[in-house]
Amino acid sequence: MKKIVRAHLYISGIVQGVFFRAHTQDVARSLDLTGWVRNLHDARVEVVTEGPKDKLEKLIQWCHKGPPGASVTNVEIKWGNAIGEFRDFETRY
Image 1 (tube, rainbow, N blue to C red):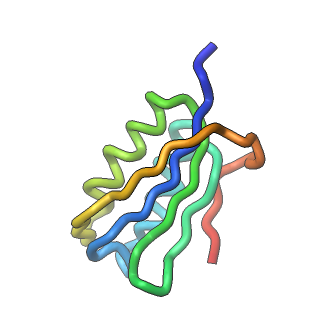
Image 2: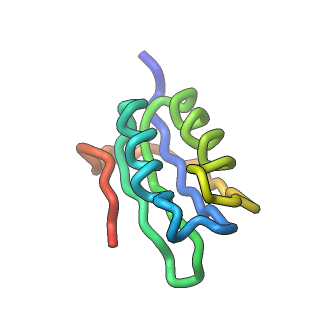
């Protein structure tokens, strides 16, 4: 059984107004990850997600590129232990 971990991401660049949240949710759900994504007031996108580390790394790899129209300049990653508080992957406002 794979160990479940948590990743907390802050994504910078042109990441708002390009459907970054919706695409992140689609990618995370396709990987069976749980958590959430939201826009921040400082123009970054924040993601908190849990799942097997190899699947989290696939989501993080995608976040470095993002959807068409995005221009990602930085992805800050903080790893931690999974808490198991999520049932799905949702968009928060």
